[in-house]
Image (cartoon, rainbow, N blue to C red; front, side):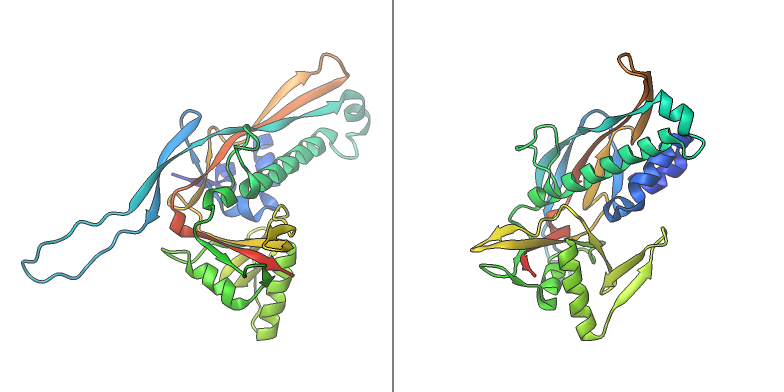
Length: 293
């Protein structure tokens, strides 16, 4: 069963691990919603659904035809992500009465891990960085793609709706875009007189589009080239779950106190995560390319 990191944190008895997960999840709309499947070993081979099966009406006594979804066999290998947090003994001893320096340093490392995952979630490419995993942009590829035009164009409601309509089996769980694109979307909604806002479990205000949460990823570039335009961005409509976009991990986020560092007056704590990303169905995601300001 796949769980979000926030749900998994509730099951952990390690206070430090809980704190790291809370730091990672708090400001990340992706990690707040993306479920993670724990796997055995370092990779998962799975069947990716390419088309839904069909059903028909039949007459009494008529021969029934078999219909199953079409699949492509895929594999995802866990990537090793993490870093060390060194805390100087002198600072910890002399200044921890103001703020616990060790907790602050580990929290900063956790935020860096969140940034790295959010970047890889969009832009990850194992062919470019053999130590990374393939992100959602590469996994969608040229399929399930809507374009604003040959050379890109300003965002429109019609194109957003067309992108959403490409996602089958239910509405997307999230619309993911750059900050520039979100500003444009909000302006379009204000022009129409319909602005939907809700508050999430972390007390943050979330914009909605037709009931779908609108989220920002700071690693979605506004400088992509489409045709003759080099100032384009991409918007993603994603379903998340064990049958759509799903995270993979082995052991979850781990925090290990390495101890005293041999060559300096410091204590080292290591934060690591064996993780990856799987797209179990190509029809449950879509992207809109060529989005200009």
